[in-house]
Image (tube, rainbow, N blue to C red):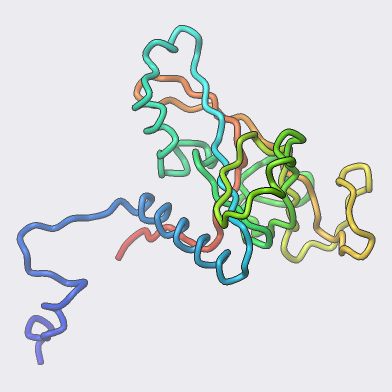
Length: 210
């Protein structure tokens, strides 16, 4: 039959309704990422750690930075607008991430390089509450010191003084520490300085067209 007569075109996700609603591709990416992380962590029986980036504005702009604007900045979905440092990040051990920090070029790692999260180096003040918490979703109170990442496929090994104390049996190939980085961007005339981790969930890609 002709494509226009195909009955499947009258069923979801197709529609003949005059009102059409489109979800922005980056917002869809954020929503799908949250779903994927929670589902994968539950399947692997691992705790999910929620880390919020630190956002500050210029002293002269403090009075203009309302609570609504602070929430909007944290929720900005487009990676380029926030220099690839998300406002809220979800992590679990053995999660796959994409690296977007150019400081790792010295290791031969470029933007978009796939990595695996081996461990999170928490602040001393955070460690006391980690053991007591049994929740599957843990809200991190202090910015972690660093993420211990493994570059997928890398064969190099960093000197011991560039890595934290590790078990002797752990394979050290491709291991490196990613510390929080500071980026600057503008949102509604506010100059935002954000400190966070320049990584993205590797389980979701942006759909450029459909």
